[in-house]
Length: 123
Image (tube, rainbow, N blue to C red):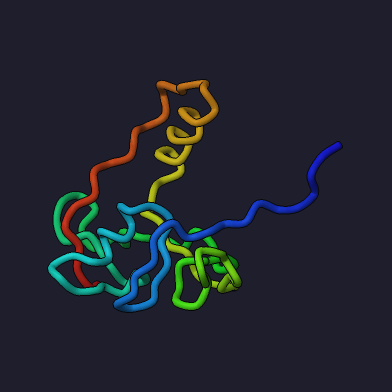
């Protein structure tokens, strides 16, 4: 028997400053540099061979969040915010293949490991 229910894509980090949702603390950190929020849709690499390229990508526009005010009462989840856009650090297909190979245990050594994230700012 298979479970036909699709897996929920949830945010793991939520910014109370701008209301953006992120999958991974690295994505949150990228958007919140220099003590202020950067729009996830326009945050771009500021130097190096990827200069000007977007740093974040939408993981899903149909995400779920239980981190917003009002989602929990008396230690119990009472609601989910849905749909929300959940952002993640942008990766090439080759970088994504590397991550998936590590997760699956195949450890594809030909796949490229993700590049380090560099300082970002508005595009």
